Length: 470
Image (cartoon, rainbow, N blue to C red; front, side, top):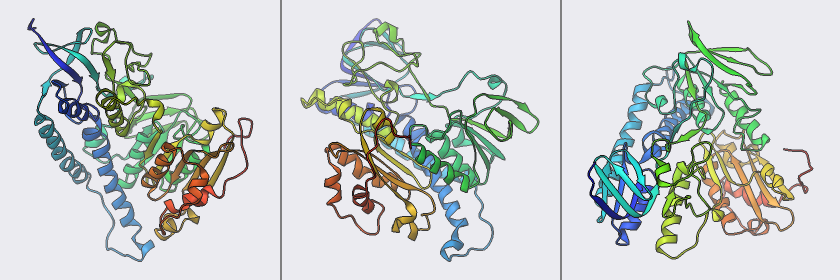
C-alpha cells in the first residue's frame, strides 16, 4: 500500500442510485470528490433490479395479453410461446446502454474521480482501495445489498437461485418454487407463470406481502391464484433436499401436500447489506444485528463525518428512497436545509399485474399507532377504467383517514395504473392534505385516480385499536 495519504473533500463508497447524484451535487459545489465502485456503476436497480426485472415483466404481460386476445375480440393463429433467451436479451439491450451512459456522465463530472476496487476503512474517515490510501472530510456509504440466504437444513446440498440468477436462466423452469411472499418473489412468480412455468409460492407467514392489510394481501393472493400460481402460506418449517425430479421442498402448512418437487428454487427472502467486508470497525461505524449501518434521521452514522445512504442503512429498500437519501443529504449540506427521514412519506409499488401502489400507513399500522381511523374502500369492478380494460375482476382501492383531524394517513391502490395513481396520495400526505381537500377535487374520467375523491366521500365508521383487524 502506498503510504501517501490523499486528501479529498468527500469519499463516496458505492455507485448505486445514491452515490452518483450525490457526487454530482458535491462536485458541482466545488468539492473534490472520489467515488469508489468495485463492481457495476448503477448498483442493483440498473443492473439486476428494477430495469431488467420490469423489462421482463413487460414481456410477461405481452404474453398474458396475447393469450387473452379473444376477450377483446382479437384472434391470432397458433399458440402463444415465449422465447426466454430473447426476453433476457431485450433486458440486456436496455440495461447495458443505460449503464454506459451513467458511466460516461459520471466520468465527465469535473472534480469527480472514479476509482475501481474494494474499499476498506483504515481509520476514521480513511479508506484504502488497492494501493491507494484516501482521506476525506466526509465519507458516504452507498454499498447496497445482496440476496439473503437462510441457514436451512439441506440448502447447501441443492442448487438454488437468487433474484439475480433468475435474469439469466438458460431453460424455462418446469416447476419454479418461490420461497418468500414479498414483492420480489411475487413479481418473479407471476412473470414465470406467464412465461409458461408451473409456479408455487411458499411463505412462512400467514399472508403474502405481510406489510399490507390482510384484505389487500388476500386480494393479491387471489390475483395470482386466478392465473394458476399455487400459494402455500403458514409454512412453519421449510426444508430442501435433492430429488430425482429436481429439488424436494418440504413444508409444514395448515393444508395441502407436505412436499413440493420443483425443478428450480428461487429464494426471495430479503436482502443482506454489503457491509461485512468494509472494515467498519476501523472507522468506528456501528451496525445492527442484521448488518445494516445504524443511522439517525439525518442519515448520520455513529462516526463523525460519515453517512450511510441507500439499502445499507436499513431505512428504505427502494431506488426512490436511495435517491431521496442523496437528495436530502445534499440539500442539508449545500442548501442549508434541515430535512430528515421524518419528512419522508413511505411509498412503494409491487409490480405484479395489476400493480399495487402503497402510500403512507396501512389501516393496521395507523390503528396500532393509536389513530382512530375511517376507511374508504372500492373494488375495481366498480371502477370504469378497470372494467373497460377487462381488468376489474380483481383489485381494490383503500383510503385511510384520521377520524379526529381528517388527515390522509395512507392508501393502497391494487389495480390498473395503481403504481402511477398512488403518487397523488404521496403528494397529498406530504402536503398535509385532509380528506375534505380530496373530496373537493374532480379527477379525469376515465381513470383510476378519479375515484380517490369518491373514496374520501365514502369513508366508513370510526375504527380504533380495539376494533377487529381488517
